[in-house]
Length: 326
Image (cartoon, rainbow, N blue to C red; front, side, top):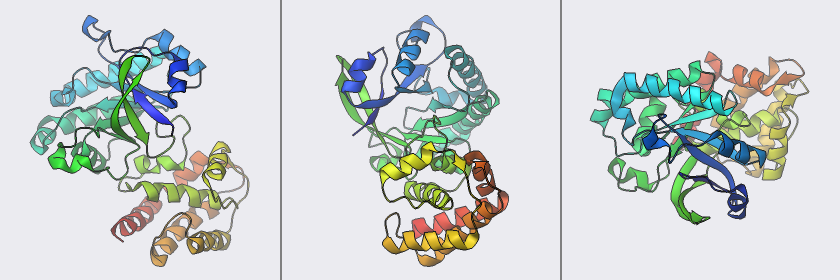
């Protein structure tokens, strides 16, 4: 099983690959002597990219950064953008802000929310996408505020969030699971729950960060599958889905009836979901309507824009919430 690793000092790409690591989360922080031990360097970043290991940048100065409120969030976000650009980190990729402590609702209301808002705004202004690392309740508060695009659960501290953190957070892209020693260094290993979470290959599995309210991982996956189906493609296994993701063009305008027929096939064979027929029909109508309104040779981003229109958001959120309750 391919995993994502987070750690504090350089590990050779050969050792990472031998440990079945496909991606890493590496620190950026205030450019001070006391953070040099954990900050990724330009040389290390270039080495990882050259060896096809995905890199996601993770901002953290202190575990309790988020208690600094808006001023700290803005300063940290702006410095994160500066360092990302200096590394050559591509625009559109995720920069994570870490809340690595058992935050209370009182702390969130007093400072954490303001930090998250300011950090996210600075990251977006810099051309990147904000993400959050934290325990169960923090992910919930951030999602409900509609602030971040990627969600990484600090899953090892199971007592946090009133023990809710012992459970997987619905909609988590990554979940930290345990320790793993690689090249003599103790690292944290993370389970990949939603592929392409870092924004390296933007596709419709990322729609949860774009449409607030959809947090169920299977719901997000199904939405992507349905969009691919609208292209006349009915994926039946992970390899097929990966191939569809690699093809970023939609070559054919597809009639709503054809979409409905394909969706009925998927529903009938129960390959991807077990949603109620009425809920699937509602979401199918929203997807079909969006696809029917775009012309041949549109990009995936244009389809995302259609699906995330005001009407599309309402339909998708309604259907996803019904499915989570069923």
